[in-house]
Length: 497
Ligand code: BES
Ligand code: MN
Ligand code: ZN
View 1: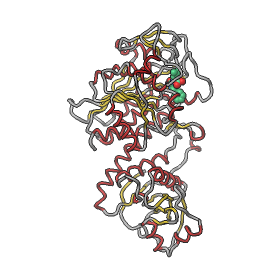
View 2: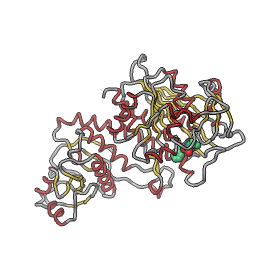
View 3: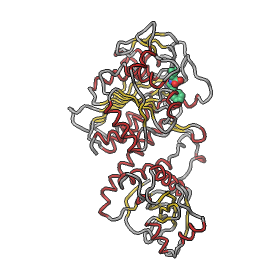
View 4: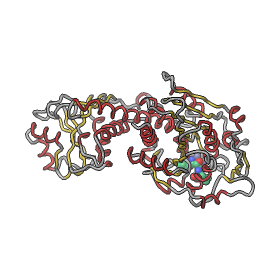
């Protein structure tokens, strides 16, 4: 879909559909008022009769209003008139996108971006509109045969801007929204692909695809033999149970001078997590194809960096393999040696994410990074603690943690901090190795981060546990693309944009 700024009054603009806000209780936005006046009070009457309302997300499609140039007018409820909340604004945009998709309109002009949103400026409203509209249109039907694919008519969505003088700023906001949306889409596609398609090799090929046409992107894929030379015994111990060869994928984006230390994003890339010998129960095990959503978010964030030509150096690191039971697989009690030299007793083979991440984090040291953020569907405990509204966030650098919290708030893709106190480290004691790979039932998200902290002492590091936010189950089963918006916002902020 194409997005562009548009100027012109709501009643005279030629468009397939003019999308205007109505408020509670029976208030008109200025665009709605213009149309109402030109159409002899048609909207006021509808509101009075209760056929339309300002309830957030409530939509009413009107056709052939007299005196109006637009073929259709879509009324969208945006809540209170004085200020619309961020959540209601998103709800309204999603409802708009759904209603437009169900209509025959090929193009539309959205006046919702003129609505006042608490603490948000026009650039944010436009960028968010692009993100919401794109997300609402997203379909994953590449694995369905012809008849089951849905045709989409709407090709152009305009955003109302008061005057042409506002166009350059609006264009910028659209570009940011579009880059984030493209990153989210890539992350969702990768997440939704099944384990028999999206293997470590598939992820490596996807990384190579990212560099096409870009001379400032370099992709290196470390193979099993390379990892053996580096002594990545923890990562390789997980990979041993699978017939798919493991990959450690490095995507280096150079948007700034060589001397500038990069920001490193490390994404857990378990393309299927059966639990291994400590096998998971059968119910919903299919959802463990989403165990590479951390990796997917790294790909998505890099996609956005490349599109936006961010003046930063960013490295994406993705350790990737499957976790399956096999004669060669890790067994409970096995002791493995990580690249750092620290030994690990594998008490539960289902705590595999930390085993592949610890070696990738040690590998990250060679970039002498400004910051390292790992993103992982790491613990079921995080789903219990925070549910789907927020990712778990822990780190060894208060400023980095604060920057990520702020990026989450700004992008509407939030995280919540959990403590990484040494008090929890005792839970990882092992009688046979430097540490165990599990810390017992209590504080599972924190002890997982405590494990990783033992491999990031030389780094400014933060960890995002995205087990609760990366995908949805049930009827809406599918990847969300989170936390791409947060990561891109974090990088935009670092670039001073
Ligand atoms: N990928 C899972 C975490 C997960 C589970 C995410 C369910 C979302 C939903 C991870 O590899 C795992 O299995 N973690 C274990 C750790 C435990 C054995 C210490 C868990 O959370 O049960
Ligand atoms: Mn697991
Ligand atoms: Zn896992």
